[in-house]
Image (tube, rainbow, N blue to C red; front, side, top):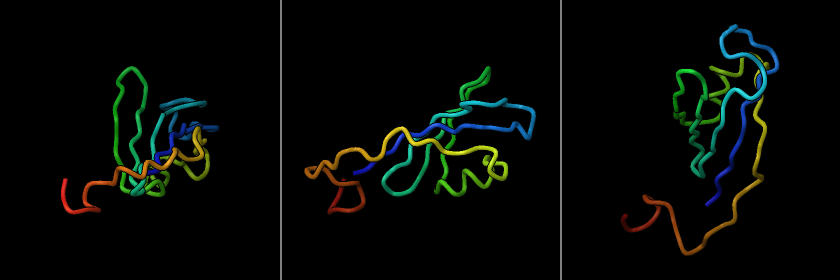
Length: 88
């Protein structure tokens, strides 16, 4: 099971809303789904099916990039993801 934490770093604030620098924290799940936390005066958490989908909306043409915190997490062989085995 591989989880990867990341930061979204914005170099240019195209929308003039969130500013520049670290604008969100996220995690990429082993199935490719992404959860993102936007810390602000009105914080929210969003999920996306793919990292590319997140960047298509919030990447602003390259003005926002992913900075990986983790290369990968260690594999834990005694566990498997629900849906990949015979039950939950």
